[in-house]
Length: 401
Image (cartoon, rainbow, N blue to C red; front, side, top):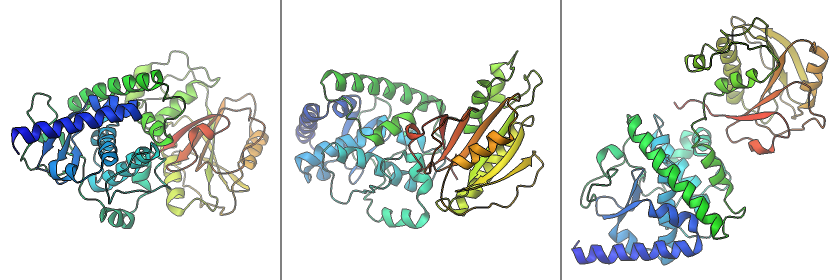
């Protein structure tokens, strides 16, 4: 490519960003934070988490509205840290899950995408982590047939450093995205956090951000919060808020998982409900029971009672870290009320206690808020956390495998 051709294409890209600014200031602001390079090293377009790379022939074959959609697509991948959030997950499956999210967001804003893009309207409102968990190998293989190329590149291969001149004529295959340094991720997080803040401010200033942010984007922004931790650690923070005397608690113990060493002596009772209704598969029930065992191992001072619950309530089963988990019961409809009614009858109001409900969130809630604190642990793909009417709710996303 000659220098004149490169300059002409860069002008076309700049013009596209200006048009994007008129229609969607949020995306245009993010685009200004990305260094866009023209290259023949990839077949379509991609990002390494900071820069965006576009193939010349591919760009020239798109319509104007597809130019806007393409820029929005790639800049969302970068700003939402999809390159870094992959971690040790399978990169192809992760890339497909990330494409489902950003394509849903871009299309919801009225933009077009190049032919062959991946779309799944049933999943696109979820976070990438949730979609990744819900995609099985068969679905991944089928969707991969429509994926022209993996567009999440390994930043270790170059292009992340703003001082580089670009990757023209450089072969840039997608890789496993593993082993990325914490310094690289931290720098990118800070960079895009600033970009997202400015984009949201400008979006509101232009009057285009009044409640129009797509649900998928809201969910993704929530996953950028560093506080997204093992939900059992969240349970510890939740327990601290109960009436139990935690005098002398030392916050430094959290990171070392020595959660209960500073208790002032009083046992905390925990009532755990595992949803065994017909909407919960065997895989999910096993996942729930694994989390119950995790609770008992992490919090040896807890006195735990387990209930299985669908439209009825089965139990309680008293558990310790050494207990054998009883066989699940259920399979009917979902009604959360029987569990809370059983706990009200079982619980001695003098004892400090909390309730934990592991479920997909779809069922009948009590009209009256229970007297005990409630922590809802919602499956990936389950009810939106803001739709839980009482208590606190966290998302259960398994560790990547």
